[in-house]
Amino acid sequence: MNTCSFLFRTSLGKKYLMALTGLGLVAFVVVHMVGNLQFFLGPQVINRYGHFLHSNPELLWGSRLGLIGLIGLHLWSAIRLSIENRAARPVGYSKNKPKGSTYASRTMLMSGLIIACFAIYHLLHFTVQVPGVNLRGQDFRGFVDQEQRADVYRMMVTGFEHPAVSIFYLVGVGLLCLHLSHGVSSLFQSLGLRTGKYGPLIKRSGLILSIILLIGYWSIPLSVLFGLKK
Image (cartoon, rainbow, N blue to C red; front, side, top):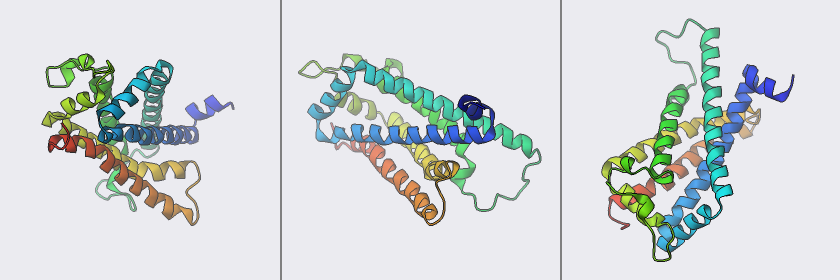
């Protein structure tokens, strides 16, 4: 059986596929947060970062297409596994919750679908820059700084000054981090790496990482909402 057939046709293969795409998505989320936090270093730094990305379209579009591919494969494998698990156990639990499960683990599929919708909005808001979704009546594509670079700093401030947009981001990121609090540990388990004495450490690491990401991503819209960045 070749690798593609194994990954897409067998349950074990789908688990590996979901774990590997999940690992790629975690890496993207961490790198994206580090890039976004340059916002706190001022307009010059974050605008230079944005200019670097837009000056390298092969890097920018490669990451965008890669992100879309990872999300698509991750969701597909999760949905297929959920369908297969329900088919294998047609009579569900009536009242009792599965022992040892957490709220995060029981809502992985639901939170994953909501996060996908949040990611689409984020792309339309700051990447494609569709004026109709920013709720400010402004076209971010016209924002340029004194050096004629895209004014990423002004775009972020303007975007997050609308309370509804910021609250939506806070909720979306909160669900993402809830998803990761279980997902990071689960992907190592699927790859057969959460074993022995390292099991509890990996589980705690997933929780710690999700908290760090929550603080990092929340810090930007909250700083704008409270008038700390203008």
